Length: 458
Ligand SMILES: *[C@@H]1O[C@H](CO)[C@@H](O)[C@H](O)[C@H]1NC(C)=O
Ligand SMILES: *[C@@H]1O[C@H](CO)[C@@H](O)[C@H](O)[C@H]1NC(C)=O
Ligand SMILES: *[C@@H]1O[C@H](CO)[C@@H](O)[C@H](O)[C@H]1NC(C)=O
Ligand SMILES: *[C@@H]1O[C@H](CO)[C@@H](O)[C@H](O)[C@H]1NC(C)=O
Image 1: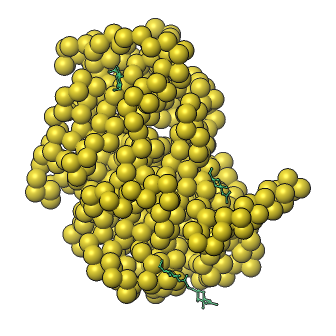
Image 2: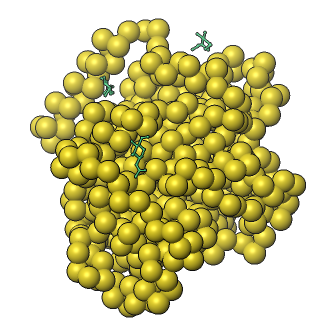
Image 3: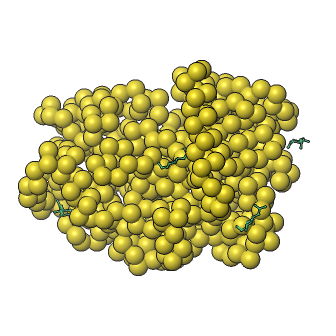
């Protein structure tokens, strides 16, 4: 308790010093690169909520003193498990800067997977919110919308920056700004505006913050574009993949074919089932995987420390390959859940991608009531690349190669090979002896958070 109140005083002090011009950004905490949380208060009760650009509603586990019960019940369904509880309202405070009176949220009973004091803060488009469906706007609107409506002349955008745990050279956990940008990354406003792809009305429930990858817009570890075709039926240009930017996924979700093209040609790569994570490639930790995405004609190199994850270094236990050697986990993972038979996207780019960009989400006409001159605009995303390949390479040498920059062994040629052919695959799956520690199991819901989650009002 003592420690807590001291911390609060320090935070308030910083906010006062920060000055009046730019409101202090909301700082996030980073748990092992697997979840980024914000501290949020409901009627003064503190919760640590995952910031999730892939959903639109707020729920917390525990108790909120003096909250008002709306008499409605809600339910959120994930790929694994679900949460349900009464829909309530309370005064919300986010960081030192943002507050919303009488914010609607769902309260759930804490359990092992949803510990007391945890929750999810949805920052996605409100067409995906089920609370808004039943409670008249603005009362039932998501927090972000309530904040946008507080100042109708301020821009309807928010930005998100995610730090990298154990990055040898850059140390910041992450932050969010609403209607403002981080001054040190103001160049983001000059980046191309990437139109958010709208779903037809009957699919609106599944609307996400999704954009089109450039044609040949995924450059593999051999420096060649990976051949890809969109599997989104409504997409008119199949050479461009539809990708969702979703900060609620620790591990980006991609097709098996693309995962194989990225990881399969590294020496020692195996496709295995890792407990707590599901099926993915594992490879020797000294494999430097260089991949670049392209959006709007710009290149976004991915830090090799984000392409594979060393569970040991993050204190998460260890993963061993079929020979018993320690291995790293490929973070871009074949889909672990079933998309609809007519999917609305090809990839989900989660935290491992988002650490490489500063991202601005402008809600444009997702926010019909605003009088902001931008409001009638098409919603868009801007991305500013944060990863400089030579610096990233030297980080990788420090973190994974013990500081010794040796020439890479090269890739296996056999395209069908995936590290030795399908026989190895089967053997590896059977031999999977991976053990992932506590954080994966507690955080499992975040790692494999499903797309098709809903809140039903009863
Ligand atoms: C947020 O983090 C930044 C950079 O890490 C730090 O300078 C700032 O003081 C923090 N702000 C608060 C309110 O804690
Ligand atoms: C708070 O919101 C609830 C439901 O949205 C509404 O019934 C109630 O009147 C509101 N209370 C205040 C003080 O605005
Ligand atoms: C609303 O936003 C505008 C533009 O960012 C700003 O100049 C103004 O001070 C804000 N008004 C209030 C009441 O915060
Ligand atoms: C990855 O990219 C860096 C920076 O361009 C380069 O120095 C390094 O050799 C590349 N590694 C591999 C394995 O291709």
